[in-house]
Every structure is written in structure tokens, then in C-alpha cells.
Amino acid sequence: MAVMDVLLVEDDAAIVRALADLLEAEGMAVCSCATQGEACALLAERSFDIALLDISLAEGNGFAVCAAALSTSPDMPVIFLTASDDEYSTVAGLDMGAADYITKPFRPRELLSRIRNALRAKSPAGNMLSVGDVVLDASSATVTKAGAEVPLSALEYRLLLYFFQHKGKLVTRENLRDAIWDSAGEYVSDNALNVYLKRLREKVETDPADPHIIVTLRGLGYKVGE
Image 1 (tube, rainbow, N blue to C red):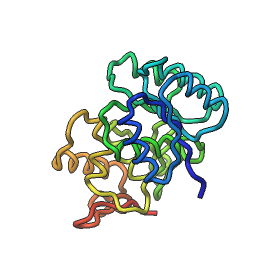
Image 2 (cartoon, helix red, strand yellow; image 1 turned 90 degrees about the horizontal axis):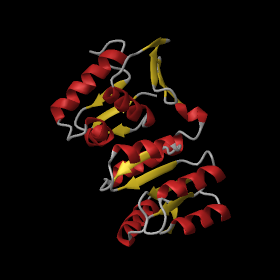
Image 3 (cartoon, rainbow, N blue to C red; image 1 turned 120 degrees about the horizontal axis):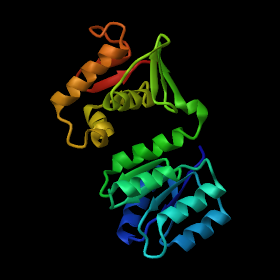
């Protein structure tokens, strides 16, 4: 299996060590640097599968690195890491073509999930996910059942996307809370998660009382059928 090459541009040594340990434990190869100049030089010399960029650098900024990354490798996903959560930075980064944006401090599992999602989105085939007669098109954020569009809320869509991306695998309730934390903007309680799952099943299952798309594994979590 090919090793995933990650460019990490961050000027906080403690964060670099923590992220490098996390990503390398997942089998990724991490190349880190602390300045805009170093990052742009690396991008000119070699290719990477994904770039994680801090916006505020001691020398330069992540926006300039993003521009350089996308000019050399237009299909390479870029994820911004920043302590800032202001709307301008978020919009500016996404408008430049960044795949995602995550605010520090972030949880390790969430970052890994964002990285995997960004890498999946590189492939057009990866945009089309299906289980039974339900099809999710990640490129347009639309869902259809038996050819008819299914209207979903942002939280319902995010839940379904997570389920489909983990088709055939055990999905715990903790996994689901992590997946929708950002959309909810606050801690997701067990009762709230039950409500979201009930509404989602009512929209995608042929018989919500006897689900075949999102199946409950009692005492463990859930599994989406093949």
C-alpha cells in the first residue's frame, strides 16, 4: 500500500510533534516546515497527497502557501488549521479552493476524519456513494432514493455521509457524535442523536420500523449494509 505524503506547515513545535505522531501512527509520512518560504520551496521540489496549513505563521501565511500548493497541484486537498474562527478567514480559505477548515484545538479523530474525507473527494468516483436504492452524491450534496431526491437537513446529510463512507464497518455512537459535532455547534446528547437517527431513517428506509440501510447492532452501534 502506498504511503500517504502529508505536508504540514505549522510554526508551533509542540503542535508539529503531536500531529506528526498522530499521522505517522496512521501510516502517513509527514514533512513539516514552519515558514511560507520553506513550504513553497518544498512544493516546488516534490509532490504531496495533502497539505495541512496553519494560517498564521511567524513568517508569511497559510493563504500564500495554499495558492502555491494549488498552482502546482490543483487536485491536492488543502486543509487549514487555525486558532482563528472568524468568518473572514473561513470564507477566504474555502474561496481559495481549500478542501476544509478546522479550528484549534481540534480532536485527533476529527482531524483524521477530515483528512480521509478530503482525500476521498479527490476522486470523482469517490463522490458517488450508494447503499441499496439510496445514492449520495458528495459533489452536489444531494441524496436520492429510487431516483427521487430526498430532502435532508445539514445534520442528517452529515450523518448519512459518515455512514456511507464507513459502509460495512461498525459505527459507534461516539463516532456519530464526532461526525456531527461541528454542524451542531455544541455537544450532541444521546437523546438528540436518537432524534436525528429516527428522522434520517424515516427518509431513507423503505420501512423505518424494519431498517435495512442503517442497521442497529445492539450494544455496539450501527452498520450500513453493503
